[in-house]
Length: 450
Image 1 (cartoon, one colour):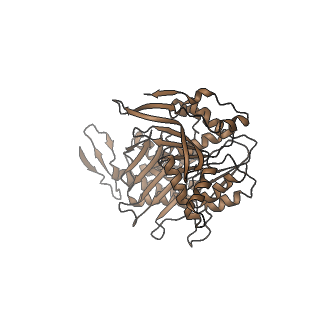
Image 2: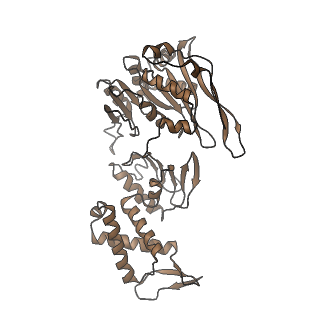
Image 3: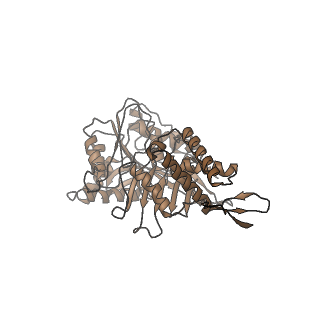
């Protein structure tokens, strides 16, 4: 393969020419052409008007501009290269550049950009390195600026960390130098365009029908539920699913740092916290929103995730006339979840003794659902436990359903057994009083998952 130079005056493009006369632009030359076409578009129209054009119209404009430049510069682009160039420019102007195809791929759950040259994705709970890359770190910063500027934020050396949200609800986290040593770091937790249903969880063996029946009864009978799990375990997904069991006649107030919940009921009020501005003013915390929600006549309060002082107001709301409230928490087990809540309570107040905090938690929370993302990427409900109250200086809990991991097969897939512990729900009478019958058989089953 020989390198052929374009000798025409003013022509800056070089291309590789193979023996069979097929021409393929290398990456560097391709980026030069793309930048020139982009520049010509901006010269012809204001950038704001370009970005607001309908996609089909913009594609035609790019195609015409590319054709003109090809004639002027004598660029031997084949049909495949033209189509790729038009697609890339559309993504650059209207989307998120090289990672826009990943944003449109429903199989991708997370996009992790470690500097301009390494882009990882999560599919099916596992991480994979892609062949996608940005032109350089400046190119990556342009995409980051495009994301954060839409929500009135900025990222620079004075503010090198930013949390943001895309138009579709996807969560974005950015860390740039000098905090990150290998260039800008961009993490995107995608917001699924199609809501996951309980039927899908059952089909993937994330839980059993018996566990589903119990959880449906717990929500409809207004038990206070805490969903616990690690990062990416599916806490918000499960919260979304369980919230669908809430009666349509109830007024629901959702409170989140970044709006992710998609409730289908007609009477939903969505609240989102606000970070401080550049001057450090104007912050509205989750605790502020929880307090204010109590004045909004809620039937149920759903807090996307408790992580700080707002746990005090949430627990008090659960204890004072707002049963059926739900939230999530980062923890590896139900006991860890309770310990975290005690720590958060101590952050919120110094006037409570340890016993008083445990008593508040034990009387407010009724059910803890523990989720886990297993090493093979699958997500399962590994336990559903009930809080028995505060006795003997401890919060007493009992497992009702558990998943026992038994091993790993030859394909690296985990197999195990869902089962009940044989203990009947202490809330059975309460659930029955709400007109819901829990079949006795759900408290005596085993179900093997291979």
